[in-house]
Length: 450
Image (cartoon, rainbow, N blue to C red; front, side):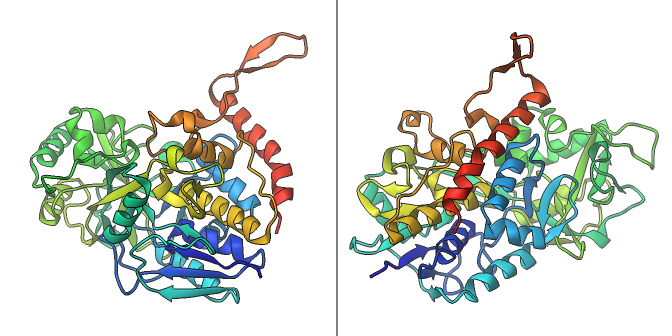
């Protein structure tokens, strides 16, 4: 009798895993606690809810590791990328989506699949029996009861860190006598980003207010470890007065049509929904209290009368020490009928979470069908991320990681026509990583074709 695969959690990883399993003819049961219970960050009852941003980041698969992962997922017939492409909104070279439409599409496709059943319930402990297959895809906001059960099972081999949510404002409340439309270096459509300029004096006043604003407090027993790729803006400012002008407020590649004076800093707002009525303040994740956010962010020229559709927030993320606990097929070594997928494994980011979900789904399907699973080449985005979270030589320094060329096998150079070695640098090196990956992934795609 063919095995059923149970998936706990219907975020990006769980949704992608369910799709990969069901399309291979295997029955899936999704256990999702929403809408009976919500985490601190989730508000929408649909699957694959995006909470921190509407951006899946760069879609450039010729020079960028994230864009490469997008393309590999398209080639692997990813549900998440398919729905993202359908719900896409303008964002220059990035893949940004209408969040509500995106989650609605994912939910509809899964709920309408004849082999997928959803049970709305909170799973509070790891399954003890070993005759069925499970994928734990509860994400970085795993409920306390299930988290305790996992920790008990794995002997406390876990860490936690915190990331924050950026605020969203209504576009029609932005003052366009001060703000203007333009993408950096005019990439993409000029309407992709709205820019708000600050003079040096305004910037320093903003940073001072940011640092002195009232912040969310933590319990005495909580140790705060932020992920460097998603630092609250006030934490960045604490690292130095000029930090923000080299980060999310950098003024480069932009020309203010309202003034001949070059701005000292620029705040950008990215489209947040299909109708373009909402704009996300780029890079402005924050742990400030709501009242402080309104006061501080309305200091930004163009946002003096901004109306907030959502204030920023902060939440705890939990991940396991995957290189110690999981095998190369994402199985829990102590109980191999259980797999882990998504951000709880220590991958970081929406698209990375979905990619690990795709792999977990494919591996589980192979096990249910009693066929051998094939690992993706390490030179691909899939393979590099999988290696990062399962390589037991990475135990000491293991931390959550976005996909980046630093975790790919190194490309040193190439042999030229005259037989000499030529080192590849800069953009050519990034292009070489992408070209190698998209070449090497082709045999694997044929192996995993459903």
